[in-house]
Image (cartoon, rainbow, N blue to C red; front, top):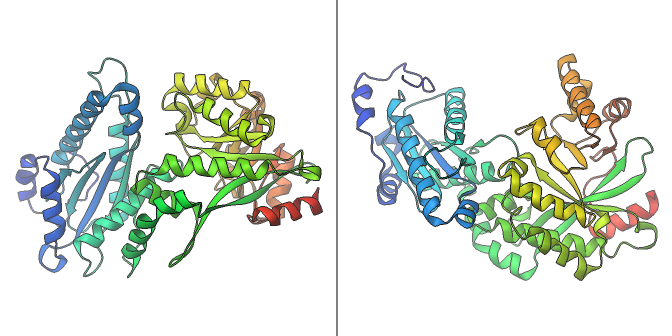
Length: 440
């Protein structure tokens, strides 16, 4: 069977004979292609950068030999897919670490490229087979379409940026690179060069996004968000910050720093702020053996009550290793920590996982909030999610609330908490304290 993800219009019949000869090349071959690429000579090209998001976890839990098998099987699946695809593939190569580079020649629409990315994610997410136990990987895909007169090095840099976005985003597992912008690659290089020292020297700061009760409007707590004021680039938001961390393999270090700093800030909430809750994010890579003990140590050292802390996890964090997730979550909840499923509606959305795991909150993805005042079908879906959460005795948190109409509809539907620019933008710790005292 021939894959239909790439259009055949304008492609010569020679592609049919070229594709079966495709081989998995070395990183050296990929570097040569990138170094020699010239759009004027070689024509249009799109780079797919495919990464195994959870390879580090697999190596730690099952051993590097298993990790090597996972890499080989992933490469074999990619090779089979692109051999059957109606597209010219000048290079398909394994890069150092957890990534593969695929160059696809010719003009292709965004729709065709997106279909290919979705198919790749689906194909690579299937059980690997031939292992001692069932094993799935969490693939990500970055896509970069060559810009006019763009060098191969800049194109590859944009592909890396797109993959980093796919690693860090919640829900959709592929990402398109932004347009070729002069200086974009240099900015990414500057971020990557300075991130490790920024983490070590405490340059990453915490902002606090206030959260409120829907029924009363009362301030209930805040979600911790990260920012970095780069000396040359300016303010760097959490998205670009974690994208850089993914490129530099520093995600766990960055997340651990944010959690520790946020808890330290919240430990100083006394007097009129003593009942406020703190929410911090917890990524898939962190929810492994020993995490509950490390969090307990952070809380003990800071003096912040575990009963005032909520950990917000993506759905992927829960389903990637259901047994390990359940064990660690039970340890966390035994300390008094509450657990929220973050950005619900963008990932797996499995009812069986939600009912099987120890959870307290379901947090609606901010893209879903406007749907409550939109088309009737959108409202039906959102109402069904809220009803399901209520049936599972989970509290509902809506993020991204920007209009009074949205808040009113959330109130009518029985949503419990909300956050968004309607009431407040993210605040510095000192500004948050003043805000809390005025709105307590």
